[in-house]
Image (cartoon, rainbow, N blue to C red; front, side, top):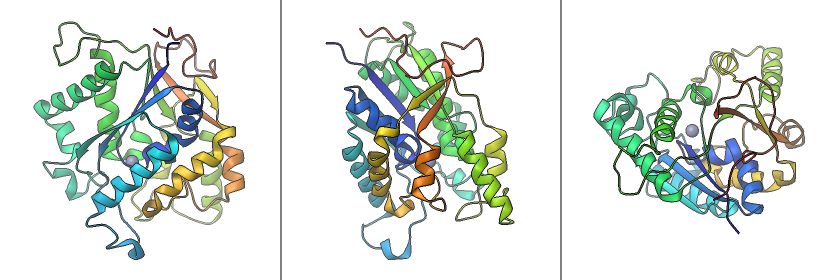
Amino acid sequence: MATYRLLIAYAHPDDESFGNGGLIAKYVAEGVEVYYICATDGDRGTIPDDMQGLYPSVRELRLAELACAARVLGFKRVFTFHYKDSGMMGSVTNQDPDCLWYHSQQPDLYEKLVLRVVDVIREIKPHVVLTFNKYGGYGHPDHIAIHRATTEAFMRAGDPTLETACPPYQPQKLYYAALPARFLKFVAFTLRLRGMDLRHMGRNKDIDYQAVLDHLEPAHALVDVHAYLDKWHEANACHKSQGGGGMSSQVPKWLRDLLVRSQGFTRVYPKPTHNRVDERDLFAGVVCE
Ligand SMILES: [Zn+2]
């Protein structure tokens, strides 16, 4: 029997779990081969004091956490591109020649990044590809970089004039992760009640929560993941250095479960004719060859 294949391209160890742990667990349980491109090593991530020294470097700690999550979720394979984490937008680390954002800003280096994604697509032949939205979820430069490269790679992977190691292959569908609007608006409501400044959120006050709300995109697919919430939490817990609590550790688990029972996705290709949910499965209409 033919097997469906899904490729997820994100930027950091933890993006896969915090963002889509429920979706990945569901599809793996249903026999789908799920692959992950993790573009950076997450080496700029802040880690708690009591975890300092557990590993030789933040990079090794983050990759060990990713390996843990990959085991829990059951990825068929993880492609680690090993770019350096760029840090938040505007920080001096964006100019590090080894970081992903720098590579996305230099035409020749960007072309190499796109071709690396093309190579993965042509090798594993995913039916469906998933990446971040245009704002990279919350404006992280690495998220925006992998969003652009993956979108371009999706469009070029089937081009017979583009020569790489593997023959051309065109995936059938491209999605961007649609953030859970209801959940985020609820969190914004509680944050405003507490008098917090939505423009400067997060542990380092460098996340513009209002901009996240402003960049929300419509969902065309809504996938029920409620049966996989425990697995999702288990994968999140692997990323202990990053909080391990998913999208917000300030909200109780029972309430998170209630609000994120379904995950939404913006369909980019084939282009939707309207902005409403018309799919409950990313593989709807896919021909499995
Ligand atoms: Zn990330």
